[in-house]
Length: 195
Image (cartoon, rainbow, N blue to C red; front, side, top):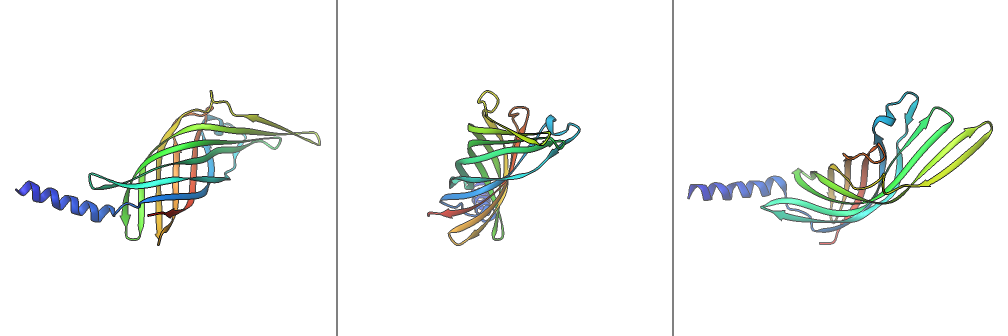
């Protein structure tokens, strides 16, 4: 009997702590792209963060064992931009379809979320720019699925609900090397909840 009462109290407290999950939602936003890896640590390399648009997808809040979980899937632009001294620049934009699961925790009006994602490479482009004498040479190359493939990692963020909308800020950290680079994003979006 005491165990049953304890279990009920724990479930009620979990519901109060974590908050009710949101229903179906659609989102649209962008990212600040960044890469990490050995190529970024070489002498003379300067990395520049850059904006990518658009990121979009759907999400669904569910209760699993009375714990709110957010499931989702969507298109995410990742990449990096680096300069090799003054004469060479390289920019990579890789499109992925990411799927994720995140647990949420409410802090007053704000939801903190943390979880994992996996992403499937769709396509992308590598742009190179060379300065030679007074000329600028451009070279575009399609990204190879052999070098850019399945990605996975962690995803953490904050969500600020406003009526049927919310503003989200999320950090996405990839664990798998994509052409000797781990792809990380600071993602921001606006989300509309259908129900």
